[in-house]
Length: 215
Image (tube, rainbow, N blue to C red; front, top):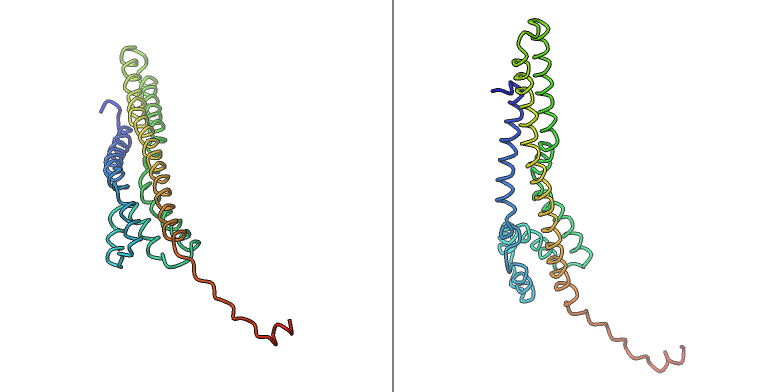
């Protein structure tokens, strides 16, 4: 209340930032993104060919890593290039979902000090207008008005600094998950392609005597 009406957008930004931080903290838990032992288990399923559409659908909906591996297994009968392309396409969608709301959090970190500065400027303008009308009869009241105006700046920084730190933290966390998912997807890709038996080469029929002579 001391900061005036300019505190309202700062408070709204703080509530939105808090909601995003709690939601991303819960969504980006390591056990939720990279379930322990899942990649090894999926590779064993692929080696034993114990896969069916229902199994793949359950795998894809379980976690971001499971969705990436399921995308590779869905086209496991095709060439390595096609499997790799499917992994890359699915990976872009998975990363986009993991980074959901982080742009909003970064925007709040950027505009928080600006909203605080805006509130401070509005407060100072209002105070000087009162001085122009009533004069400087009470210097202590003027000092109090400056203090009230600076409350907006302090509030904006209080919102912006944690929002910026947590924005960078979640970005780095997603980047680490992406590296680990790429590693697991590459291991599965190698199992699906490099370990596959090569197709037998057709044997050439022996040449007849007349054919040898013509050659």
